[in-house]
Image 1 (cartoon, one colour):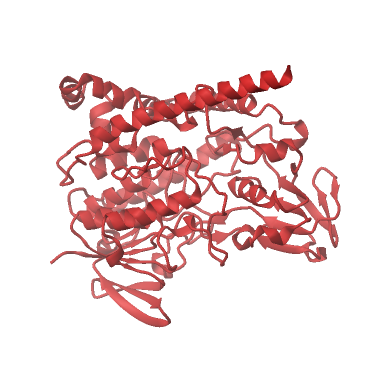
Image 2 (cartoon, rainbow, N blue to C red; image 1 turned 60 degrees about the horizontal axis):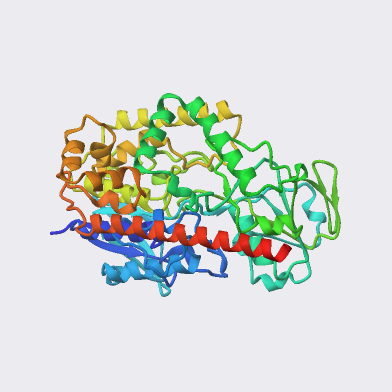
Length: 540
């Protein structure tokens, strides 16, 4: 009889996990409180986190696809939110997941009952309980809205809301809007407000690097990371972290100034925190609004001094502010978890989990049957790193890979906290060092080994017999994999004896991904040259 698994949350991570577990022979059941799959990638105006109408994915289509389900030709270089949602709907149907999913089914809590997980959920107004051998929770990375406590906010007579509750933007017609916080959400709201608001101020207390989606050679910015370059990154981050961090900061600062040369000192964007703790903002959407003055970065709020008046920490006073919107992000949480299994006993602190996945529970049956998705991440584009987590969990639950003893799991957690503390101290910054960030050199190697993908075995060492055999069989293809586009399909090439067969279409997809990326790069360069030529002709 197949082992039963409940997967709570049918956003991208939950869907991917459901497919992988189903593929590996588990009896799967998915639970989703909304009436659709794909989670936040479908816009909603309720009290749940979602994209806005004009949100664009930060990773390019060339790096973002699920490893065995490529994007269609119609997808933009940087997919829109709607394209991502439609992609998830298509993924769900292509792999026959929909019959295994309960929609409008909100999991309220879970407990351990006679060696089973009792999952209590409300569906269509009725409470039910399902019993499962394994339980996977996928609440998303950011759950509880974080709102600052502005001094004397009670004096403010305009609307005050969190971005989570952002309504139809037409509501802000002719208003002066103050956004508190400058990250991706602020960019999304500026774009939404542009047709309606009179002026938008963006209050922030830390610097920020603005980078473009495209490099000067026409490639998407994330195409710079080939397989070879990834291993250089992992080596440098592990053995020479200070040198590598300084190098990346200089590179990104140069890229920022070249892509967006108009960055006045008054905006307060420099000095920016290190990219080691604070990722840059892909700022193509917001920069035109910054440049034309519609959106203006200002210093953080000191206090509210009148019904519509805000004083900033540099002494400047903003009059006639109609609405304040917090774009200050979210805390990670698992709201359905009872106290015994809650991975966040302390809010906004790293989760009490091994590899940010498995509970550090005294009962080995709990450790080997409960897992959390989306609670660990490192700078790597697209959905692949979350696929790897689901693959690793599946391999462990099948007994093909194994968790270490509890003492080693706890030692890993202590080492992880020490790494975070040393990084924060080194860069004197916790500006955006969110609770789920992990060390890539350590965690990626563990994921590769536990999931059984074979990337390290075939590419990381020139002395590997697997690498030599792969090169000997097809030298040109080997070079394309290692130095060409880092296609997601590369993760599906190899059979490492873990019971998961390679994707038969992986090689063809890698070749096609490289062809499409190059064709679009050439098309983009031609468009840029045409634009320059028309500009010169218009100036004569």
